[in-house]
Image 1 (tube, each protein chain N blue to C red):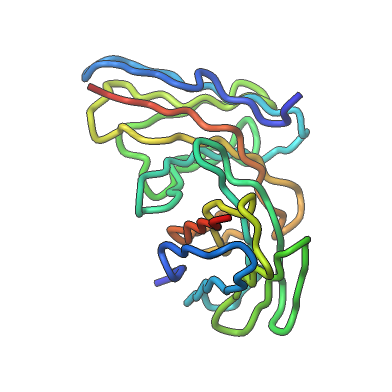
Image 2 (cartoon, each protein chain N blue to C red):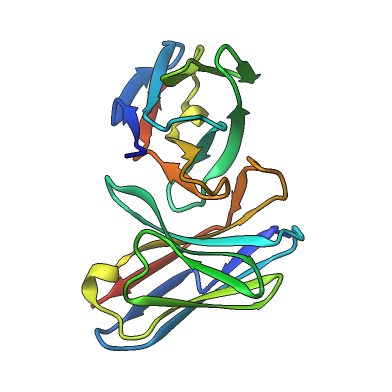
Amino acid sequence: DADVTQTPRNRITKTGKRIMLECSQTKGHDRMYWYRQDPGLGLRLIYYSFDVKDINKGEISDGYSVSRQAQAKFSLSLESAIPNQTALYFCATGGQGLTDTQYFGPGTRLTVL
Amino acid sequence: EDQVTQSPEALRLQEGESSSLNCSYTVSGLRGLFWYRQDPGKGPEFLFTLYSAGEEKEKERLKATLTKKESFLHITAPKPEDSATYLCAVPIGSNDYKLSFGAGTTVTVRA
């Protein structure tokens, strides 16, 4: 089984709808991240969490919110989806070391019409 | 401003034709540099971490090297299965746990 799972894998929605993307991990990591990926722009950090009580904004948090329900679960919400939020969304977890690498889920392809 | 730049954006190689990808960074006080491989429609997969100038790491046909200003990913005698997008990333800011990613180099290896 995969260490980091994301649901759904694909989602098509309409402008103005509320969408939740979910992430679960079995790596036992405290740190979890949400990124979006757009062609030519690379991965950009939306939100990150170092534990259940610690949530931080990344570089592009406007229009998004998150919830850390447990050590293993981190959800990303789009309260009112807009077309320019169409992108690939990745969840990642990070280890305990100062420069530990991050491990990524398989991604969610979100299309907002 | 911390910045990570990868070049070229795309690289088309013939099977067996060795080449190198570049990742340059302007982060002060580098605390590590990561290389990832990403296949279409999938999440990035970790390849290497380099911590200090002069360090090298190898995995099959890939070798990553690090200087004070840039890192290279050398692909020796590539095969079609090496086709992917290669991403580099560095920790940024005062918090070691955030990464800044380059836009990636898409490598296509033709048989």
